Length: 197
Image (cartoon, rainbow, N blue to C red; front, side, top):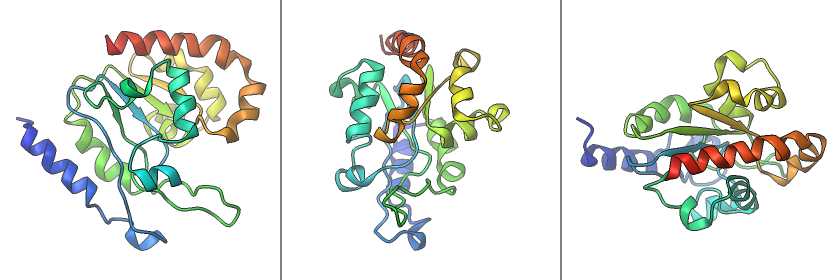
């Protein structure tokens, strides 16, 4: 039986994970949120600099945009009894020479995701935010571009809903793909509300 004690033990293991410590220029700070009662799961890329500082997932401009897309407020978003957040890479990966965040560590998802999901039997919908989450969880689609995966969102239901990363770096993508705002977001918001009631 999956007890609260075992869940707490898993969280402690995750929070003290040093699996990638030698690859980071900073102290690892794994960030994962959620309780076994959560009904919505958000799988993002990896924590950014602000999240590294605060320890709160999507506690930045990307999070503001994501909450706007979902049409939910901060209190609902951070209610761990309703929403779980598990990035592909649990720690901030650092930046490249141009100041862009590095890709998430490939070690985290195989090590921790299935263990965390074992305690999440109430999840009704998983949001796959960005290419890394989509290619890991939607293996039949992994050769498609992220745009084409997102265009295929109806085929991913009822379990998954692929989304672009809400970073400002995707502003041009959003302008080039108005169908996302016009068609996908209203459907996303309805589905999220269905999961949270």
